[in-house]
Structure formats: structure tokens, C-alpha cells
Length: 215
Length: 235
Image (cartoon, rainbow over all chains, first blue to last red; front, side, top):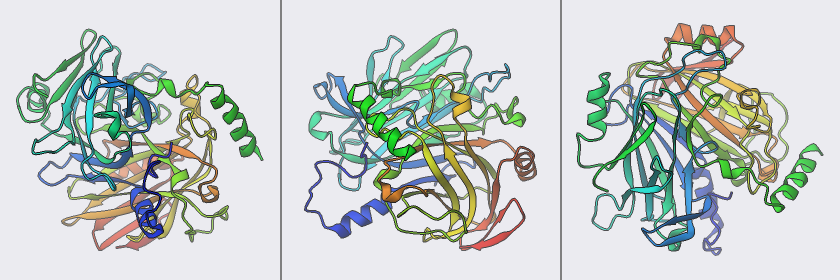
């Protein structure tokens, strides 16, 4: 799981450059109230490489050969809890998360794709090449509703194609505070805007995943 | 010796293709994997708009050997010390109670040593030099069949409060027995924002044996105090 010291990197790179990169990469940054946002918004920034293999998708023609980085049990994951073993309610408020990839240390324009599984277990594209103009980074919003019974949500950031399996990138997860009114906040996060592709995950009565009509 | 045995055993498991990583790719909401249920004051009423839980930030120490020693007088490092920096800014005037928990990663497909010995959580200056100690912990291997008992082995709280335009703070998470990264160890960090004021944040931590520090002030002039009341100036 050498996520940061990439295999395939030019081995002729100077030791000084490698030392600098290693130091700067080993960092997780949490910024509270990022510029232009509210007192309770935050951004968590990490450096990633694709650390898993075998993603398939028709977009980019991945036939089980694209690398990816998952959100999950041993990867970044935002959870709103559930009942604890004593039956106490631990469910927190619904949240709007914004996921975005950025240029990495080595890869200036990483070609990333954000996928989310629908309720049938099929990976669906949420965003590729956000912003146009030759940019290959990705951006998406995820609305996670209150947990009612049981909810499982699968998301990954993958290489557009196997050519980009060694790309490195930064990724930020930003909690967006759109107010305490759930309906208003949900709309502001998702269907009320047409700039950032979105996914809405609800758990009433069973887990449902709704995608924006644009990618 | 124990680590070497575990690594050898793990290598055999990996070679047999029995890695547990296949269960990893999900964004899950399942019992036992939420915030530490052993924190009794959190048993209910935490569903506020500003509480949140960011789970499973993977810290792979094997990639980051570093030769720095800390100055807190705790156990001597075994070789160089790989570490991660966990830092950030706060421009909000609201105070924030963060509960930071560490646990061993789920079975690692490449590196078999899935427990971590001598993790050290410190607060540092802006140059990543240690100023004080927050927590030492040894993290057992994660057992998906017994997640509560095998997680949250290392828990600490930070009270962060900006009193100026911006507060910039710095902490370090080191694998003090990392032996220059050669143990190939990793850990998982979870961040839980608790909807509490400073008094409740620290008093409930103290009552439950959870170490804590407070970081209060502004960039260039802030004070870090530990649970014993010992304070250090930061910048």
C-alpha cells in the first residue's frame, strides 16, 4: 500500500525532491470555516493515490483494470452513527459533503472519476472532468439523509482509464452547512443547484440513491 | 519478535490470498462502527446539526520515515520515527470539541503487521517539533467480528478555540516503534466533533479517563494546556 511513494515514478528523481515530497505528503489538514463558508463548515484535506485495483467502467473503458481509492471501512468515511449496543439513539443530523480532487504532488492534472453505487449495486458515474477547460479533476456533492433503519453507501474515486492508474492527487472532503431546515438544506446541496453533480442518499423506508441529471 | 512473527504469519495469509481487504469498499452505517459507544455522555442527544464523525483516515507510516525525536521523556524511539502531521486552521469564533480515536486498520492486503505498537500523539510547533504529549497507545489488530472491543484503543480530545482572525494548530501522530518505517505499520484515525462547550468537553473527558488538551488563541499567539493544567505557548 505504497500510496505515496509511487511505483513507476521516475527513479532518477533526486533524493532531495523525494525527501521534500515525503515530508509534505504526510499530512492531514482540517480547516474549520474555510473561506466563504460558515462557522460549522470544515474541509479535510489528504493526499491520495489509487490504492486498490480492478475497477470496471464503460467510461474510460476500464475492464477490471482501473485503479481506485474507496471510501469505506478502512478508508475515509463519514458516518452519522446508529444505535449503539445499548439501543441508544446515536443518529446525527443529515449532512451535505462536497468531494473534490486536485492536482497532486507529481500529477499536475490527475484524471479522476467519482462513482457511487446505486441501490442495485451498480457503479454509476457522478462526475468526470469538472469545470471543463481541459481539467480532469472531479467534484461532487453527497447528501446523506437521516439514518432510519440501515443504510449503506458506496463511493470510490477511480482513474479514468488504466493509463492514469499511477496518478496522485489531493482530495478534500468539505462539510457544507446549508442551515438547520432539512428540506432547504437538502435542496441547496442537490437539486437546487446545477453546477456541482450530486448524489442524494436516503433511508426511507429503504436505502435509495438518487443521482443528478448532469455529470 | 512478536511483530516479526505476526508479519511472517500475515505474509503467509496474504500469499494465500486471504486478505480481508475485500470488505473495505463501502461507506457504511453499521452498528459498532460509529463513534465510540463507550463514551457514556454521548449515548444520546448527539444528533445536532454540528456534530459529525469522519471515520477511517488511513495513516500509512511505512512511507514516511523520519529521524526526529520528541522531547517529552517517553519511551525511546526504535530507530527513526515515521509520523503524520494532523493540523489545521480555524477562522470560526465557535469553539470545537474534537474526539480523536485511533485503531488498528482492517486486515491490510500488502502489509501483514496489522497492529501498531507505541503510537504517540503530540502537539507541535509550526515546524513539527514536539511541544507536548497528548497520548500514547498500542493499537491491537482490528477484528471485524468484534469491532467495539478492538477499536478506540487510543482516544484523546482537543478543544480548539480561535480568539482572533485565525488560529493555526499543529499535532503529530508518530509510530514511535516504527523503526524507520520498516515495520510497515499503519493506523486508522477517526475524528468526531462533539457538540459540547469547553467545560463539558474537558470534564467529561477527565471523568472517563480520556486525555485532552485545549488549544486557545490565535495564530502566532496561542496556549496549549494539558489535562494537568500545564500550559505551553504556541506560535
